[in-house]
Image 1: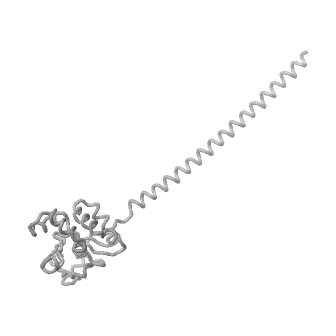
Image 2 (image 1 turned 90 degrees about the horizontal axis):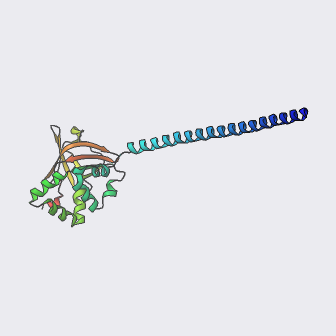
Image 3 (image 1 turned 90 degrees about the vertical axis):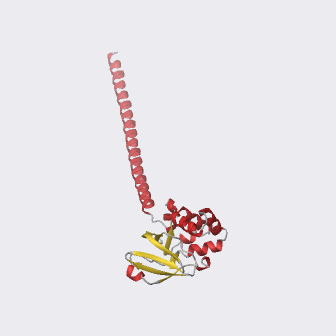
Amino acid sequence: MRKSQKFIALGAVVTLGLFATACGSDSDDAATEEETTETVVEEYTEDTATDDTATDSTDAEAPQTIVDIAAGNPDFSTLVSLVTAADLVETLSGEGPFTVLAPTNEAFEALAEEMGVTIDELAATLTGDVELLKTVLTSHVIAGMVMAADTEALDGMEADLVSGEKATVVSADGVVSFTIGESTATVVTADIEASNGVIHIVDMPLLPLAMQE
């Protein structure tokens, strides 16, 4: 009877040992799987963060076109609306390079006052004749890069405008101006570089000869 009880007790110990070993193995496997999962998640998170950082960095450093710069400045809202009405956004967003003489809202208001009309009447006149509007706007564009800092090279030159007009350039005492007939635009802020050219902010829109008759 005692011998039988010993065998039963021994069997119970072995069974418990096997059960404990099995549980320990399952626990170790689960822990290993958990560690592996955590490692994969961490690596994926790090890779994703790196990719996102690279994308954000690329977006932040992406160069702006002439149109992008103008559209991002509320002082050019009149110019941007006219460029849009003339369907020139795609053109001025092209490869270029272009040199753009960019009148501010204040410059357009000064022209309207000089012409004895309101800014709304001036805008209506321009947008009412798309071909005239295109001529006016392309009279502010030079194909190629003309940097206002090159004062010696600029003085006395004739700039070929995209409209087909020619503008006489005068550079004196650090001030650069462009003239078509009796219409003169003076650069107030020069050499704003864009991905497809350069912008010079001017104090007055240039009028093509057809509008000066």
